[in-house]
Amino acid sequence: MPPDRLAPADARAIAAALVRELAASAPSTLDLDGVDLGPALEQQLFFALRDGLDASVRRVSHVDVAAFARITAALGYSLLPRRQRPRSRESSPIVALIRQPARMAILEPIERALRRLDGPPLEVVAVAQATERAADGWPSKSDLAGTAPMPTHRLQDVLLPGEVVRMWRYQLRLPRGLRAADRAWSAAVGSSRAAGLLTIAARELPRIALGAAGLRSVVGRWRPSLLIGFDEVGTWSRILPAVAHASAVSSLNLPHAEAAMPVAIAGADYDRFAVFGPRAAAVLRKAGIPPERVVEIGAPHFDALVARPRPPATAPARPRRILYAAQYVQGAMTLAGLEACHRAVLAAATAAAPSELIVLPHPVQPAGLIEGIAGRQPVPTGVDLRIEHGLGLHDLLDDAWLLVTAWSNSVFEAALRGVPSLMIDVEHASPVAYAEEGLGIGVDTETGAAAAARALLDPAYRAATVERATAALAEHLGPLDGRAAERAADLIVSMARRKVHDPE
Image (cartoon, rainbow, N blue to C red):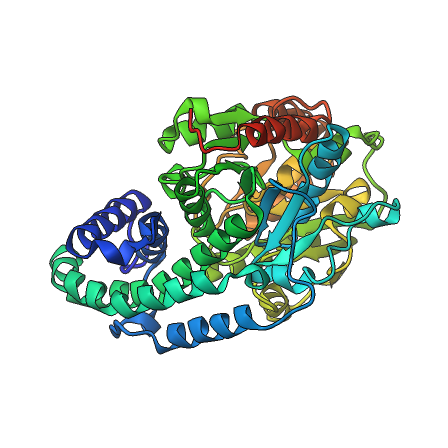
């Protein structure tokens, strides 16, 4: 572990202690008119301590000029006269916050199930990367069937001027609050690390507050019956529940992947957490989430895969198609680990040659990340490599010979379609134990990856690998009946009808 990185449990304990100290010395720094900003700040400090402070945040600055510029721009934008100020179709809608475009694929089958139940209308609010695709509704597969896309709005379009004015007042008092915490933070973690963490706080708290102001504007405009997130780890997983609690609105987290990191999840405070299956429910209990808040629903975005007839068990013809579900640099995955994983993928593809290696970039990777890594490695003879930006994993699995990844949930999809998985963990950093549980073959070297690929050339070994993975699915995904979206919709309707925040 790099010297500037802490073990996750230590990072969590220190981040929580620093936020408690800030709340004691300058409570208004963590309060936006009743919305508690402390959990979101704690999460940012946790990430910084766990992953290591970047050199760019070593110099402390309690005043973030860029924050004042953002608030000024937001105020001007909120005051602009616009003919199509976002409005909900009906009163008390369900509002889902979407940060990544890929989350729409999860929401679409749930929205269809909600319509069948004649549930409340669903509105989508886009932030971050999702805002690029939020104009004029969201193009989706449902459009091809003649149904209208889900109404999707950018969070900045919903901002109320009064909420931005509150942001101004908050930003003016923030520097004094951070200065009050300076000495205590230095005593807790040392002056150098404290300087970096205070700089992060000065940078992130205005962003957190602006996100909270945006969600308060959503509540003020639409009076939603339920706020939904797709995030139990990121900063929005702390902002959304805090706004919901302050506004007496229920909150629900829907699963976009299997919950796997208890220390990172600890502190999330949704009224309900929907999860895939028993394994994820156990992870949330370990994270300190009360069992009565956890509901197992399965994986809605896998319903279509479950319903599709499984392809024949015979191995696909040559050239052997290998799908590489690449990850991105965050948390346990370092740049060096991702580079090493790519080299091991090439070794596996070479052992299976002639092979077609299709690299699938992660939906949230920085632009050009995996392309740059691939460009630095020569493609071996007998391997035809391409980076696929159009088709997705579900489109390519049925003709695949092998799926390769580090520790992504793509192993579930592969097992559902009868494709063996190879998991590469060069740095022994995986937060999950999929290989040990039989979901695939685990290796930690290029040599091991090549040996695993050669072993899969044996039809009997290949069949046994797939059989083990299939047997392990229920523990992770719950009932494989294709009705996870229905269960999600049932849960949403039951919570929306209560309307008021009620953790019990």
